[in-house]
Image 1 (cartoon, rainbow, N blue to C red):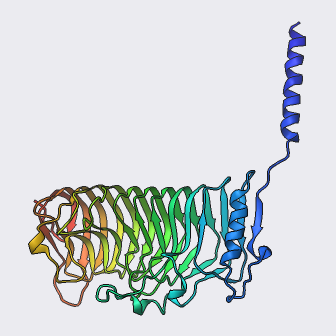
Image 2 (cartoon, helix red, strand yellow; image 1 turned 60 degrees about the vertical axis):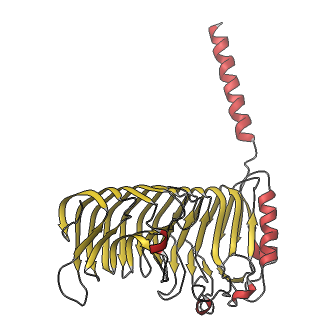
Image 3 (cartoon, helix red, strand yellow; image 1 turned 45 degrees about the horizontal axis):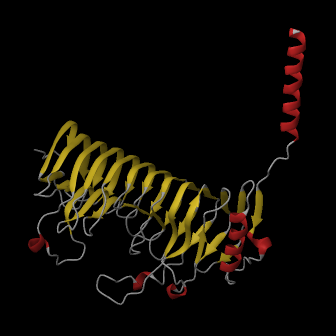
Length: 404
């Protein structure tokens, strides 16, 4: 009886494996944009062809969809790829996507925009060419109220569980990559390039995001390499080279009402080369919101001829005169910061600037093994300047710390 039962079980298992093995494998369906009407001549606007391919790939119900951009130059007007999709989407770019050199040709805020999508993967060794050179002289909004609105290169809004890998972004009109309300997103192997004098060409900009990972990425721009704005939490940045640019910046914060806390940031194994700033936190002195900036770790960071290697500025005012005296101190509370093994050279004598709010002093700032030597034109050793900071220092300390 036992032998019969055993034989029956064995037969059932064999039938199960036969059924599973005989099921048809659902393959990834590839949508080559060139085979669906796109022309790699650098002239024909392929926006409609691209959105048509996206619609078909997004609506497919079984398996994965892969949109493939082969080698060649594909001119592309402003385009939006909108979900939700029925399946995961791969977007592989091996060619060049070319924007119009005329900024007025792109009628939307972002040249290439992804919205309301889960499980999106963008990869390939292609280039997003924003052709921003003609736009940069028009970027004078600080003194011209009629300045034109310039498009960012690629945007992600309400995109989750996704990633971008190996793409190059070249000469954006405004920022390169913009993230809003994006969660669980990995950025790796990306190259971002624009001249150091190109205005407002932030490399990666994010607000209201969480669980973002940025790694093994090279960024050289005319503004912040990475800009971290209101409501961003749990951000990990590692193995990034930044220069030229304005460093890795938190803020500016506090200018608008209803801003949210920024917390849980780790920045490690970074090289800043020739940037205006390295580690930077900036808040408006005349702040309209009371928010918390907390639980930041900066570790293993090299500064090479950086003008302001460590810079907390709670009197941020990019275009004086400002109304600080009339509106009072910043209401942004900065606390629980650890800066460890920060080393290299500073072009400014003030290598460490901790200028905090009188109303909301910085709390629990820890300096561990800081070695920043002055390498500027005017002689003398590097110095640190502190206002309204409470914290501690340990290990090697160049310049001498000024913490309470």
